[in-house]
Image (cartoon, rainbow, N blue to C red; front, side, top):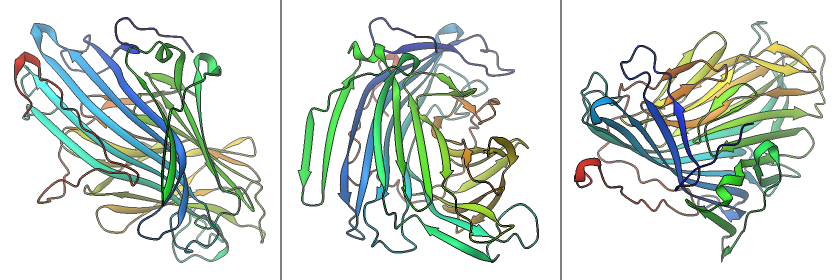
Length: 404
């Protein structure tokens, strides 16, 4: 990887956006990290009282794109990510397994831009906030009765691994530098209460450490009997990992399933994933080489996107998928893999503001639509993540206008 350094603000990155067909195709855009909090520990969930191991990332970033004639498109984004796994084996069978919870707030603004150019369309400004959950609940060994290469609910399950009851769960967070070098960060605060304990650290814009720190790797897994591990990578500047372009609010996931012990011959393996939103409805999209489930709103889009292939015993094989909606804001997704002893799949989970480049796992580029898919609610749902809520710092608008 190529190291990028900054001037006055640490980690200020200039990238050329590829917005095909728009008159500002040569405009320059930049991301800036204002601050990032990180931590690890455990907590008990209020609804169940059961403990979960957790790792935390809280990222505040800005994005600006300048247009000819003084026009500007900018976003202010706060992203709170909680990675967690149950601690105990005594949890409910249908309970929560490995989970990544994205709580986000996005504030987008077009300044001196007409609606044909503004990524928000007819809107001058927009805000969006949501809690977007990605949860892996079960591993299923099943017989593919119709031989269509995917698990369909109702097909015979011969083995079920409940991820809500892991035997040796783990959640780890590790910072890394350029070329995956080791970087030491400080954990200066410890918060302890009856239902949890969190050890945290923080880095702010202007800290020279930001020039060394490339990102964070968060690893969580179930241990035994069947080893499911999810590696998550968050890069603090636009990066390419395994050929996939990523922005600072997109998580590259590597899903590994190992130590697979089948109980019958001629069966396949499926992963049950549940995606949920606190207020927006899901849409699906397929490109032939990748598929996406996303929720879209006035200012942002949250999504889970996966390749239509995975590595099974060292070979590239097709991945089957079955999407089962449970209302507008909850979706069950069954990812089916060919029979093998070792499986690796590499999706992307993240949040993009309207106008930022959206990249699927195959590297295809496009821009987020300005179409609103918002479920009609009387008021927005407050964003929180169990151990704390966002502290929103409203920014000053260009031109001296007060925040709207």
